[in-house]
Image (tube, rainbow, N blue to C red; front, top):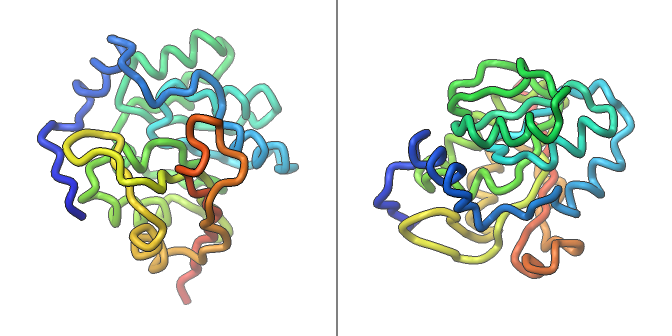
Length: 202
């Protein structure tokens, strides 16, 4: 991976981005591919995590459809409060202001939406390992990954399917990792949709 960000992607960095409303990646709504996936889910008791959720429109979409066991983790207090202000009854205990890599819980489903592309690319293998650690034995990672190069020195960082498979294959059975057919118009042809099943260690 050639990406070598020259900035420190810590809580101060992300808090300033949200306070300044400098969030060009933010769609201002739930991503259509994830809406479609969520609509196919029937088990409202699923314990769901959205890592690096930011303004968390997907979390709002889930809660309003009865998925009450939805958690969001983000380094930015402002981002989490933006969600709380939109959805006042979102349980505060399920808004986790901390580093994703410090979480110690179990989830049935983790939804990826612009978090993987925001972390330092040197942490991508750690991300795959941590996701696997956080999932139950039947757990799934579902979401979107950018399928374009993007930036070198600051997020969002891109990549491609061949690169991503190397990170995920040790920990997951890759059920789907293909060009997303129903991306938002501004991301059409630039996203992969993935559905990964955690490998169970024997």
